Length: 431
Image (cartoon, rainbow, N blue to C red; front, side, top):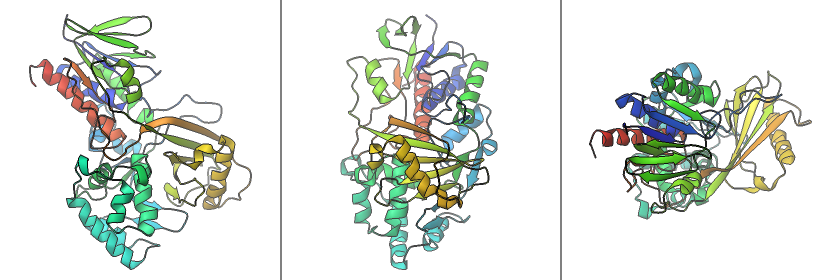
C-alpha cells in the first residue's frame, strides 16, 4: 500500500495537521474527514437563517500572541491584517473600570496600563505591578498547581484588579471560573500575552469576517489545490490496526491508510481509540452566545466590553460584530444556566441597552446558542494526553492535547502542527 495519511477531524487542529504534512510531502494520498458540512469544527460559521447571516457557532477572540495561528492563515493565503482588526488591549466594564495598554515597549506597556487603570487605588496598583514582575519569572510545576483564586490571593490580589481584571481574564481564557481554574495554565497564558516582550503580543485581534472565512474555508480551498481529498459530512465511527497501518470506517464505507491522526474532541476521541489507549478523565464547561440585533448606529464604548459580576450570574463579555450586532458570551458553569433562554436574553438586554444609549424596552431580535460541552474544565493538575500514541503510526491532536494552554484556537493549531510534523518525521524514518 502506498504511503498515505488520514486525518479524522476537520477543525483547526486537523487543518493544521494537514498543512504541516503537505509542507513535507504534498497532498497526494492525504484524506481529511470531517463530520460537519464544512471544515472548522467548533470554530466555524453556522448556516444562515431568516434573521442572521454568518453567525459563528461561538465567539473566539484572537491575540497577537497567536503566532502559529497567524502563520497558518498566511500559509493558506489569508492576510491577517485584512480579516482581523488589531486593537491595543483594553478592558472595560459597566462599573467604570478601565485598563488600556499603551503602545510602549514591553514591559513598560503593562506597567503603564496598571498604573493608569481607572477605578483602582494606588496601593492595589503597586501590588499589581509586583505581580506583573512575577508573571515573567514564576513557573508552576504540575504537581504544585493550585486554583487561580488561591494563586491570586497568595499574591495579594483582593480588590478591583482581582474582580475586574484577573478573574474575568481567567474566565475568558480558560472558560473555567477562578475558583476551579488552573493557576499553572493561566500563568502560561498571561506570560505569552500581557507579560510577553514580543511586539504586539498583547493586542486584541477581532475577526472582521466569520470564523469560517477566517481560516477553514480558505484552508479547504488551499488543501484541495494541494491534492488533499476532503470528506465533509463524513463521521468516522470506528478504526482498527492493519498490517500496513489503519482501517477507518464510516457507517457505510471503509478506507485504508498508512498513517492516522485523530484530531477530534476528547468526548469523541474516547469512542474511537482502541481499548489499549486511555484518556484522562475530563469534565466540561458550557458557553452561551446570545446574538442581539440592535439598530445599526448602536455602538459599545469599546468593541470588547465586559458586564461585571453583580451576583446575578450574568458576568459576560460583549463583542461588537458590526452593524448593530452584539454577541454576549457567558462562560463556564454558573447561575445563568438555570434561566430559560427568553429570560436570559431579556436580562442581558436590560444591562446592554444603557451602554448603547437605548431605552431598556422590549428585547430586540436575538438568537441564543448554548454549547453544553464547549471546552474541557481547565482544572488544577489536570492530566493531559500526550500527542504520541504507543501504537505505531497513530498521533493525536486537539486543544485538549496541547498541555501548556487551555482550550484555545492557538492550542489547537499548535497541537495539529506538532502531530503533522511528527507523522512526517516518522515517515522519513525519524523518531
